[in-house]
View 1 (cartoon, rainbow, N blue to C red):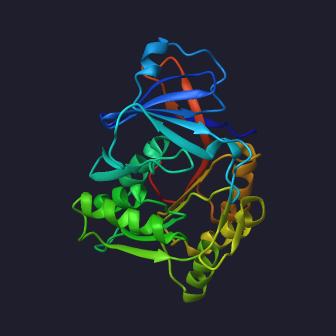
View 2: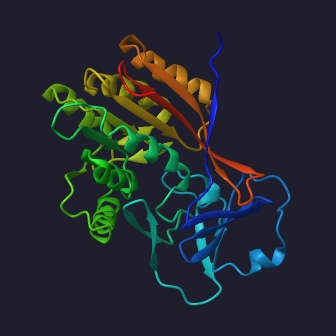
View 3: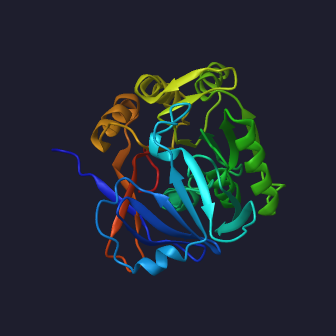
Length: 308
Protein backbone atom coordinates (compact mmCIF):
# COMPACT_ATOMS: atom_id res chain seq x y z
CA UNK A 1 0.00 0.00 0.00
CA UNK A 2 1.33 3.42 -0.92
CA UNK A 3 2.05 5.68 2.07
CA UNK A 4 -0.45 8.41 2.87
CA UNK A 5 1.16 11.83 3.20
CA UNK A 6 -0.25 14.29 5.73
CA UNK A 7 -0.55 18.06 6.04
CA UNK A 8 0.27 19.61 9.43
CA UNK A 9 -1.03 23.16 9.67
CA UNK A 10 -0.48 25.87 12.24
CA UNK A 11 -3.29 28.43 12.37
CA UNK A 12 -1.12 30.92 14.19
CA UNK A 13 -1.50 32.07 17.80
CA UNK A 14 -1.74 35.31 19.78
CA UNK A 15 1.76 36.43 18.79
CA UNK A 16 1.85 35.18 15.20
CA UNK A 17 -0.44 35.28 12.14
CA UNK A 18 -0.11 34.84 8.40
CA UNK A 19 -2.27 37.78 7.35
CA UNK A 20 -2.10 37.46 3.56
CA UNK A 21 -0.01 35.96 0.77
CA UNK A 22 0.37 36.12 -2.98
CA UNK A 23 2.39 37.54 -5.87
CA UNK A 24 5.49 35.85 -4.46
CA UNK A 25 5.22 37.48 -1.02
CA UNK A 26 3.71 36.93 2.42
CA UNK A 27 2.39 39.39 4.99
CA UNK A 28 2.85 38.22 8.57
CA UNK A 29 2.51 39.52 12.10
CA UNK A 30 5.23 38.59 14.57
CA UNK A 31 4.27 40.00 17.95
CA UNK A 32 3.52 43.70 17.41
CA UNK A 33 5.25 44.04 14.03
CA UNK A 34 3.99 43.22 10.55
CA UNK A 35 6.50 42.06 7.95
CA UNK A 36 6.50 41.54 4.17
CA UNK A 37 8.92 38.87 2.95
CA UNK A 38 9.48 36.95 -0.29
CA UNK A 39 7.60 33.66 -0.65
CA UNK A 40 8.22 31.87 -3.98
CA UNK A 41 5.40 29.37 -3.36
CA UNK A 42 2.73 32.08 -3.11
CA UNK A 43 1.88 32.14 -6.82
CA UNK A 44 -1.73 33.26 -6.34
CA UNK A 45 -3.27 36.72 -6.02
CA UNK A 46 -3.38 38.29 -2.54
CA UNK A 47 -6.83 38.20 -0.98
CA UNK A 48 -6.48 41.40 1.04
CA UNK A 49 -6.28 45.03 -0.07
CA UNK A 50 -2.96 46.57 -1.15
CA UNK A 51 -3.26 49.06 1.71
CA UNK A 52 -2.76 46.29 4.25
CA UNK A 53 0.58 45.43 2.67
CA UNK A 54 1.64 49.05 2.40
CA UNK A 55 1.06 49.57 6.12
CA UNK A 56 3.60 46.86 7.08
CA UNK A 57 6.40 47.84 9.45
CA UNK A 58 9.24 46.16 7.54
CA UNK A 59 9.89 44.87 4.02
CA UNK A 60 12.58 42.44 2.88
CA UNK A 61 14.03 43.09 -0.58
CA UNK A 62 15.81 40.10 -2.15
CA UNK A 63 19.08 40.56 -4.02
CA UNK A 64 19.24 37.66 -6.53
CA UNK A 65 22.76 36.63 -7.37
CA UNK A 66 24.16 37.65 -3.97
CA UNK A 67 23.46 34.35 -2.24
CA UNK A 68 26.24 33.29 0.10
CA UNK A 69 27.10 30.11 1.95
CA UNK A 70 24.62 27.99 0.05
CA UNK A 71 21.58 30.11 0.90
CA UNK A 72 18.82 30.36 -1.67
CA UNK A 73 19.14 33.43 -3.86
CA UNK A 74 15.74 34.76 -2.85
CA UNK A 75 16.68 34.65 0.85
CA UNK A 76 19.59 37.10 0.65
CA UNK A 77 19.00 40.83 0.67
CA UNK A 78 18.15 43.71 2.99
CA UNK A 79 15.32 45.15 5.04
CA UNK A 80 13.44 48.43 4.54
CA UNK A 81 11.48 50.00 7.39
CA UNK A 82 8.41 52.22 7.31
CA UNK A 83 9.41 53.77 10.63
CA UNK A 84 12.22 53.44 13.18
CA UNK A 85 12.08 49.97 14.71
CA UNK A 86 13.98 48.24 17.51
CA UNK A 87 16.65 45.75 16.38
CA UNK A 88 14.74 42.95 18.13
CA UNK A 89 11.33 42.36 19.64
CA UNK A 90 9.70 39.51 21.61
CA UNK A 91 7.34 36.80 20.39
CA UNK A 92 5.90 34.31 22.87
CA UNK A 93 4.98 30.67 22.27
CA UNK A 94 3.85 28.58 25.25
CA UNK A 95 6.48 29.19 27.95
CA UNK A 96 9.11 30.43 25.49
CA UNK A 97 9.81 34.11 24.86
CA UNK A 98 11.78 34.41 21.64
CA UNK A 99 13.66 37.45 20.36
CA UNK A 100 13.02 38.10 16.68
CA UNK A 101 15.63 40.04 14.69
CA UNK A 102 16.03 41.37 11.16
CA UNK A 103 18.66 39.07 9.66
CA UNK A 104 20.32 39.37 6.24
CA UNK A 105 18.62 36.15 5.09
CA UNK A 106 14.97 37.28 5.41
CA UNK A 107 14.46 35.07 8.47
CA UNK A 108 13.76 36.57 11.88
CA UNK A 109 14.85 33.69 14.12
CA UNK A 110 11.52 31.89 14.48
CA UNK A 111 9.76 29.39 12.21
CA UNK A 112 6.06 29.32 13.20
CA UNK A 113 5.24 26.32 11.00
CA UNK A 114 7.16 24.19 13.52
CA UNK A 115 4.51 24.76 16.19
CA UNK A 116 2.70 21.41 15.55
CA UNK A 117 6.03 19.63 16.07
CA UNK A 118 6.65 21.49 19.32
CA UNK A 119 3.20 20.56 20.64
CA UNK A 120 3.58 16.93 19.56
CA UNK A 121 6.97 16.73 21.27
CA UNK A 122 5.77 18.40 24.47
CA UNK A 123 2.81 16.02 24.74
CA UNK A 124 5.24 13.07 24.77
CA UNK A 125 7.40 14.28 27.62
CA UNK A 126 5.61 12.05 30.09
CA UNK A 127 5.65 8.88 27.99
CA UNK A 128 9.24 7.81 28.66
CA UNK A 129 8.50 6.34 32.08
CA UNK A 130 10.77 6.43 35.12
CA UNK A 131 11.48 9.25 37.52
CA UNK A 132 14.18 11.00 35.48
CA UNK A 133 13.54 13.55 32.77
CA UNK A 134 13.53 12.07 29.26
CA UNK A 135 16.53 13.15 27.20
CA UNK A 136 16.07 15.09 23.98
CA UNK A 137 18.74 15.83 21.35
CA UNK A 138 18.07 18.92 19.20
CA UNK A 139 20.36 18.99 16.14
CA UNK A 140 20.85 22.09 13.95
CA UNK A 141 18.95 23.73 16.80
CA UNK A 142 19.36 27.40 15.78
CA UNK A 143 17.86 29.97 18.20
CA UNK A 144 16.34 27.44 20.58
CA UNK A 145 12.56 27.63 20.27
CA UNK A 146 12.19 23.85 20.27
CA UNK A 147 14.79 23.44 23.02
CA UNK A 148 12.95 25.87 25.31
CA UNK A 149 9.53 24.36 24.67
CA UNK A 150 11.01 20.91 25.33
CA UNK A 151 12.76 21.94 28.54
CA UNK A 152 9.57 23.58 29.85
CA UNK A 153 7.65 20.38 29.04
CA UNK A 154 10.03 18.27 31.12
CA UNK A 155 12.90 17.15 28.88
CA UNK A 156 16.60 17.28 29.59
CA UNK A 157 17.82 18.92 26.39
CA UNK A 158 21.08 18.78 24.47
CA UNK A 159 21.08 21.68 22.01
CA UNK A 160 23.61 21.40 19.16
CA UNK A 161 24.37 24.07 16.57
CA UNK A 162 27.50 24.99 14.63
CA UNK A 163 26.96 28.75 15.04
CA UNK A 164 28.21 30.52 18.17
CA UNK A 165 25.93 33.44 17.32
CA UNK A 166 22.87 31.18 17.15
CA UNK A 167 23.69 29.60 20.51
CA UNK A 168 24.23 33.03 22.10
CA UNK A 169 20.83 34.07 20.70
CA UNK A 170 19.27 30.88 22.10
CA UNK A 171 20.73 31.57 25.55
CA UNK A 172 19.25 35.07 25.46
CA UNK A 173 15.88 33.50 24.65
CA UNK A 174 16.35 31.15 27.60
CA UNK A 175 16.89 34.10 29.96
CA UNK A 176 13.91 36.01 28.52
CA UNK A 177 11.75 32.91 29.05
CA UNK A 178 12.76 32.61 32.73
CA UNK A 179 14.12 29.14 31.99
CA UNK A 180 17.71 29.69 33.11
CA UNK A 181 17.40 26.79 35.55
CA UNK A 182 16.05 24.44 32.89
CA UNK A 183 18.35 21.49 32.05
CA UNK A 184 19.69 22.55 28.66
CA UNK A 185 23.21 21.68 27.55
CA UNK A 186 24.47 24.08 24.88
CA UNK A 187 26.91 22.53 22.39
CA UNK A 188 28.64 24.48 19.59
CA UNK A 189 29.76 21.70 17.28
CA UNK A 190 29.33 20.12 13.88
CA UNK A 191 26.19 18.00 14.22
CA UNK A 192 27.59 15.08 12.22
CA UNK A 193 30.70 14.83 14.39
CA UNK A 194 28.76 15.26 17.61
CA UNK A 195 26.30 12.49 16.76
CA UNK A 196 29.13 10.13 15.80
CA UNK A 197 30.85 10.77 19.16
CA UNK A 198 27.59 10.19 21.04
CA UNK A 199 27.24 6.82 19.32
CA UNK A 200 30.76 5.85 20.43
CA UNK A 201 30.01 7.01 23.97
CA UNK A 202 26.93 4.83 24.11
CA UNK A 203 24.59 7.69 25.00
CA UNK A 204 20.87 7.37 24.35
CA UNK A 205 17.98 9.78 23.91
CA UNK A 206 14.21 9.40 24.13
CA UNK A 207 13.73 12.01 21.41
CA UNK A 208 15.73 13.52 18.55
CA UNK A 209 14.89 16.65 16.56
CA UNK A 210 16.69 16.94 13.24
CA UNK A 211 16.27 20.18 11.29
CA UNK A 212 19.19 20.28 8.84
CA UNK A 213 19.79 23.03 6.31
CA UNK A 214 20.20 22.27 2.64
CA UNK A 215 23.79 23.49 2.94
CA UNK A 216 25.86 24.54 5.92
CA UNK A 217 29.28 24.79 7.48
CA UNK A 218 30.50 23.62 10.87
CA UNK A 219 32.66 25.62 13.30
CA UNK A 220 35.83 24.16 11.74
CA UNK A 221 34.52 24.87 8.20
CA UNK A 222 33.08 21.36 7.84
CA UNK A 223 30.70 21.17 4.89
CA UNK A 224 27.15 19.83 5.15
CA UNK A 225 25.02 18.98 2.11
CA UNK A 226 21.72 17.34 2.87
CA UNK A 227 21.85 15.05 -0.18
CA UNK A 228 25.13 13.57 1.06
CA UNK A 229 24.82 13.82 4.83
CA UNK A 230 21.22 12.98 5.66
CA UNK A 231 21.30 9.19 5.25
CA UNK A 232 24.41 8.58 7.42
CA UNK A 233 23.13 11.12 9.95
CA UNK A 234 19.82 9.26 10.26
CA UNK A 235 21.67 5.95 10.64
CA UNK A 236 23.62 7.36 13.58
CA UNK A 237 20.49 8.93 15.07
CA UNK A 238 18.81 5.52 14.96
CA UNK A 239 21.68 4.17 17.10
CA UNK A 240 21.17 6.98 19.63
CA UNK A 241 17.46 6.39 20.19
CA UNK A 242 16.64 4.61 23.43
CA UNK A 243 14.69 1.38 23.55
CA UNK A 244 11.05 1.70 24.46
CA UNK A 245 8.98 4.84 23.81
CA UNK A 246 11.10 7.18 21.71
CA UNK A 247 10.70 9.42 18.67
CA UNK A 248 12.49 11.29 15.90
CA UNK A 249 11.29 14.37 14.02
CA UNK A 250 12.95 15.39 10.76
CA UNK A 251 12.23 18.63 8.89
CA UNK A 252 13.73 19.73 5.58
CA UNK A 253 13.50 23.10 3.84
CA UNK A 254 14.19 24.27 0.29
CA UNK A 255 15.34 20.94 -1.10
CA UNK A 256 14.70 19.22 -4.41
CA UNK A 257 13.16 16.22 -2.74
CA UNK A 258 9.63 15.06 -2.05
CA UNK A 259 8.13 14.12 1.30
CA UNK A 260 8.02 10.57 0.01
CA UNK A 261 11.79 10.61 -0.63
CA UNK A 262 12.35 11.91 2.88
CA UNK A 263 10.10 9.20 4.28
CA UNK A 264 11.89 6.39 2.47
CA UNK A 265 15.26 7.70 3.64
CA UNK A 266 14.01 7.68 7.23
CA UNK A 267 12.56 4.20 6.81
CA UNK A 268 15.93 2.97 5.61
CA UNK A 269 17.49 3.99 8.92
CA UNK A 270 14.64 3.47 11.39
CA UNK A 271 12.52 0.75 9.78
CA UNK A 272 14.33 -2.15 11.49
CA UNK A 273 13.30 -0.70 14.88
CA UNK A 274 9.60 -1.04 14.06
CA UNK A 275 7.30 1.75 15.16
CA UNK A 276 5.18 4.14 13.13
CA UNK A 277 6.04 6.72 10.47
CA UNK A 278 4.22 9.85 9.45
CA UNK A 279 5.30 12.18 6.63
CA UNK A 280 4.06 15.15 4.68
CA UNK A 281 4.25 18.93 4.66
CA UNK A 282 4.26 21.65 7.29
CA UNK A 283 2.01 24.54 6.29
CA UNK A 284 0.78 27.81 7.75
CA UNK A 285 -2.93 28.60 7.56
CA UNK A 286 -3.64 32.13 6.38
CA UNK A 287 -5.97 34.14 8.59
CA UNK A 288 -9.48 33.02 7.77
CA UNK A 289 -8.28 29.48 7.02
CA UNK A 290 -9.06 29.44 3.31
CA UNK A 291 -5.43 29.37 2.14
CA UNK A 292 -2.48 27.33 3.33
CA UNK A 293 1.15 28.15 2.61
CA UNK A 294 3.51 25.18 2.38
CA UNK A 295 6.88 25.74 4.07
CA UNK A 296 8.73 22.44 4.46
CA UNK A 297 8.70 18.65 4.44
CA UNK A 298 8.70 16.48 7.53
CA UNK A 299 8.91 12.91 8.81
CA UNK A 300 7.97 11.81 12.32
CA UNK A 301 8.82 8.39 13.72
CA UNK A 302 7.40 6.95 16.95
CA UNK A 303 9.06 3.90 18.41
CA UNK A 304 7.18 0.82 19.63
CA UNK A 305 5.17 1.63 22.72
CA UNK A 306 5.10 5.39 22.05
CA UNK A 307 1.87 7.34 22.07
CA UNK A 308 0.27 7.65 18.60
